[in-house]
Length: 130
Image (cartoon, rainbow, N blue to C red; front, side):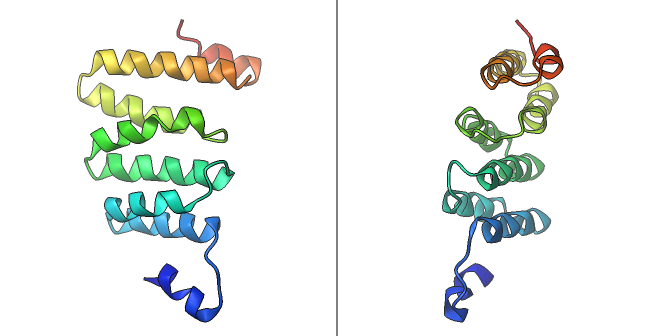
């Protein structure tokens, strides 16, 4: 694909290139390709957080909710991950499948993450499920 051709044109793919490729995977329902690209993005970057959220959405949309839940485990170690939208996707999947225990565990984890990251008081309070 395009990413593999970039070095031949003396262009080095960066995190933004990989994020764009992952976004393109969503349009083509290529969730496995999106997952294969995810490790290419630096783990602590804001771009990695964006790519992780996109990969969770792509897996969910493709009906691979188990994989989306597995990726959700990475959210707590990804500093810039968007807690609301990422956990929202995971909570929706649990709700649709009547997975109450998993849903409650996710809500507790979301609350802990919100407190740990010291989100603004209104946000942290809204996410406090304890």
